Image: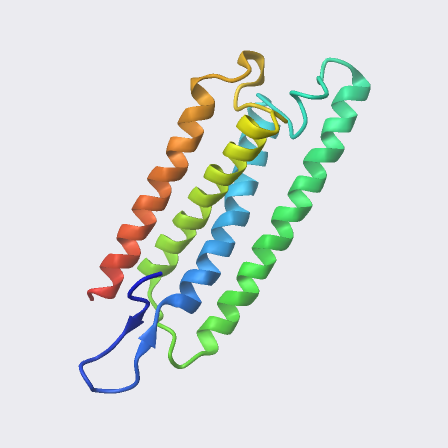
Length: 165
């Protein structure tokens, strides 16, 4: 991140938004994964982790996809836990900027990064699943990528605004 160091015109040590931003982005990546899994896999049931490769129209297919969904949730749980640990460490640093806006913005960036990376890799490169599986590659896959870009841009603006305060 450019401009991560915030000075106070010679009145004290330079402060950095980087520790809180790193923690927030890590938490955001995990929360993005949970949001995807809970909303799309469980509540709406429009896709599962491997549903483009292993259809869910048989009991065996549904069970295999459930295992992959569980592994996915385990990974995002560990990512979220790592983000919480990073946040704990950031709050102990005297040089770390403590800004709710910077934290919220960095969480949005992490969430957006999740959508962008997972959407590109799983939907377009590996074809493991699509946002709305019955349609295959569709506009919904591109809306998912666009949501990632919008979240990243919004988060970046929030962090930038927190630096000018």
